[in-house]
Length: 273
Image (cartoon, rainbow, N blue to C red; front, side):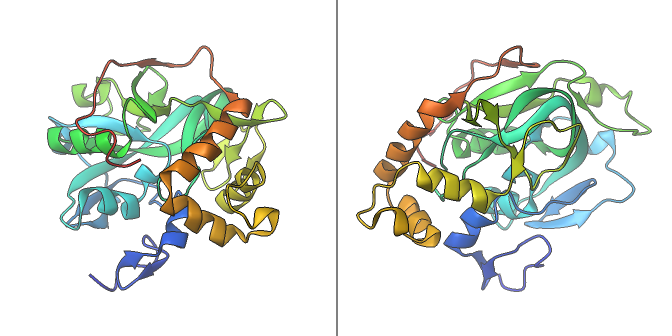
């Protein structure tokens, strides 16, 4: 499909995101309020989404690219249909994980930060969508499936916030590799705004440049343009694994997390590595 709305689908040519844009533009723009994905396109819901439309679905907090219509369409296809509601994550900031995705981005994950308040959203997934999401997150290899403690995620000032559907646990994904630490601190993702942020924040291209400088498997050495390095990472899992091995040396792991790790398996966790 061509003519995808550029507001939500940047970096596309003939309806397909370019490989460099997929890495450099991560985590992609997302609506601030509620919306439906309908046939792979976002339909804003300024009056909100009722609890009735969410029943029977599992609420999964999106901390990185899963917030974005672009990523939901890419993961679930042009027929993607699901509701997405606005949410606030409390006392956790969104930072860079100590990993590299198969498409060459340094992904986002959560890290405890007292007083932080981040506007995110919740994808309400049916059973098939949740199973596929587990695969796309390489569950058990790259990410753990988690359940947030009560109060860690709020649904905002909804008129139906006392409905039992909003009282059920909110789930999410957390990096198994930890987070990148520079000078002993995580680096927040500048594309995802937060109130009460205490960590330094940089954007995706800046973090990719930092990761590139940690050591390159390419013969060109440090003069390799970032775009060429990204292309090389996208082309080789072994090259990505070598970079992630270097990331381990500076990885930080959270303590006293407001979530529990669930014993959950993916059907095909190797499919998106």
